[in-house]
Amino acid sequence: MLDARDQQNQTSSEVENAIRELTPWIPYTMDHVEEYLRSRQNSVRIGGTGGMLRLDRAWAESNIPVEDTMDFWAILDGDERKWSAKYIFRELERAHNRRFPQSKTPWFKNVIPADVVDQAIKDAFISLDRDIIIGGAKAALEDRFLNAAMSELCASYSGSCALVGLYEHTSQLLRVACTGDSRAILGRRNAAGVWEPIILSVDQTGHNNEEVARLQSEHPNEPNMIKDGRLLGLAVTRAFGDGIWKWSREVQEAAQQRFFGRNPRPGLATPPYLTAEPEISTTKINPEQGDFLIMASDGLWDRLTNEQARKGRAPKAYRTHVTRADSKHFVVKDNNAATHLIRNALGGNNEDVLRGLLDDISVQVVFFGFENSTIENFDAVNT
View (cartoon, rainbow, N blue to C red):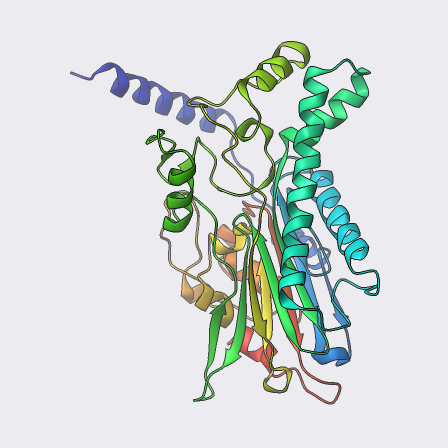
């Protein structure tokens, strides 16, 4: 005999199978895949300025508009609208320029005290998120024109992770600020001359023991707040926006009643649960040794480990819901290192897998070196 839950699961499975039969999946052609990958990439030769040689960028999307968006030195992974992530990057860049007006580029030209830089980054993240969340709350509670209220609410309902890199030319220090589950690693030769990955950020999810401990300390009477690595159903524990994990029940109910907003999260008791405060790492770059940086959204890391990304090797599966390429399908055919990583994360030369393109992925690869350097480290990504 099946109990009620088993019967419900069996019924859901039967419905899913019926839907699959009625809506057969038609894969892309390989010509389309090649055009798709090549049209979503670019490379910028920097020429050794401040110890930087070249920047490779690429992106792939499963949703239109793409959830991930990126700009120089930033990966923004938004859950609903491309504009929400673009808005976050634009505002963070403006905050940086206000705090350090002598800097006219996304990296710092002058050496500034480390604690001042770190605090400025945190303040920018937190302040921007506060504006997003408070703006939505006021729209839900106050009388406003409909279009103005909906604009504020949409920004607050949407969410985005952020991974920002700041490079100081003079000191050759690289700072990586992470909010969410995008990730940065540095490729570097060790004393034996072997390339190895150095982790520059840690995923902030319900599988991170330190994040779980932090949340349990902040919400001590909610033992069921995190289940199966998810915070009230959300995969990340830090993010911009995502108002339904931050607003009070009063605000959420007002938004629901007045603007047909979402239901409050089941189990909501003592919000806010999310924070946009980033964790920051600082690393001394060795341009003369050919260091290189990989920054990517979670779509890449769901398929590649840090070491596999550093090598460009395709991984074996460890999550049943994510198709991961087998190492025998690893291929080298792209001059753009970011496109190379995306191609192999999505299946390499396994055309049946590659034609799926199942997730939003944004990747940037920065090669460090001086003007007379050759980009030997590109081979480290490809070998």
